[in-house]
Length: 350
Image (cartoon, rainbow, N blue to C red; front, side, top):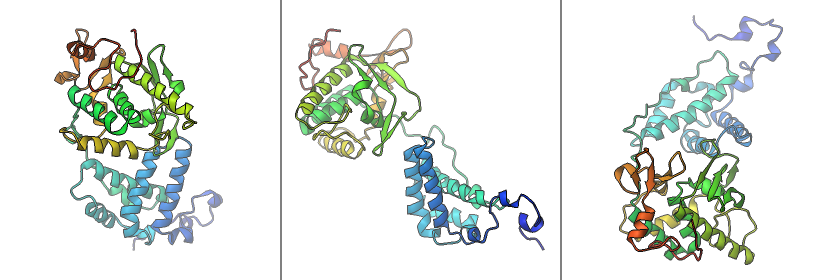
């Protein structure tokens, strides 16, 4: 009659048994899924502290395990969970979701079970049989940038509704393409006004500072004229708030009361309030990043350039921002604000 292989039964006198994983320990036999999940998340927290795992990954694992798997199998014996039960739980909780969401759920439980089965060598891990979907180009969200007219309207409304702190925040993001986590982490020491450049070397995710951006690649790039104007205005605002005793931190961008921006909660709420008053199709804030980026040579370009929105094609294959052309068309000189921007009181001679 077939029975599972047990190393300690087959080799009871093995002299290095004490150095083996404790797969046959009775405590492991009675271990529940909740106990395994707790140990798994504790190990993930350690990896985050060692900069070996992104905080967002840990948060995602915890949310999925707590919301989906703990209520279903948390109190059950870990070794008694079979593939069909896991597959049923995943299927029930991923109806009418995108492939990426399904893959995230599957990945979380697979990784947790893989961690738990390291204590059980030679035993079959049912979570490994859970498959993931292949993400094709058609499954990816369509790039949906804003037009320059929409961007100027959003910027002007942001200034009017919520003041200079938020108007500058959105305007700078439109004209630099920074991720919000990178903009949260931007410090005074990262800005070189004389050279018109900024350095992106860190991020703030869910209130936690990271010593690297999302891509793990530090970068430095030149600001276009509009972005430099916004940075000048923001630093001038910061000096006034510092003089009022409301700022003791080193960050460039902050809230109306001088507190550093640590999560997307406040900016996202302000973004929603602004778009609710405008005849502009609602999109997530990340689309402002799609609306403007930098070319490899440091010149401003747009992901929407090929659609003829923000930039024009150059003969060398790069894109150049049409901002200056639009300013000239509106009759504005280089040291004036474009329509939709509050005066910043800084004359730039570039």
